[in-house]
Image (tube, rainbow, N blue to C red; front, side, top):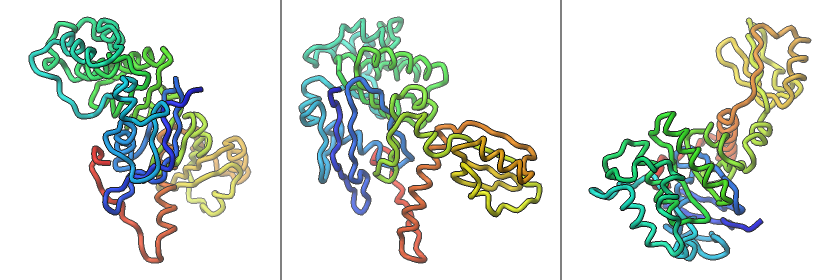
Length: 317
């Protein structure tokens, strides 16, 4: 398949902070990819490099085989960023018509409005819409140029449940045309439901890149919880299938890659009071991956020293 996005050992620093740290990433045409990370992880910096809004200090970022700036000028890229206010005193139709004329081969405005769920708001002023409707306008602006790649930075932030559902219906309709979608989000269930691949970035590094299902299995496919009832916790980490152990009060939570084997071993120890087995969520996997990265950094630090993460605003990293 044709490569749409390519990062090759890309590095971007802000002072002593490596916001993007030797990132290698390839996204193929037609994929829907979610970019996940904590605040300050490097998501927005990665998106800025991808869109040509910033340049890597070293390494390379390519879109469609050329530079990001070339791809943007050719109308191959549409973006929906977090910041953006509608032009006052113009209708949705007028705004989209204006934007469409700046592209070499745009979508018909009516088609872009239909994809974004805006047909009923065509003659409404863009600056007098609700939050959810304004987000749809931003999405339509990203689509009206008929791009092959659309980049969505926190596209459903501050939307209610109904508006979020409508937005993702529109996004899937766009992706179904064979277009490529890259989106960042703090709503992990959105990534799980709408992405072919999930890329987790932490402290500027990619710590996971796979389908949501594979990522969940890789960090321990199920959670096994039970009441300790005063029993000792020694040896729980050595039980079959157990990947990690967390004790919360008098209750143990085991992450297991083979929950059946774990439960059998617990039964042999007569430790099945209040037993509960649940599938690991993407949130569980995300927390495991990012905390694991933090633990690795701490282990690499000099004795007696724990690195303190630099707190940066998300829009700056």
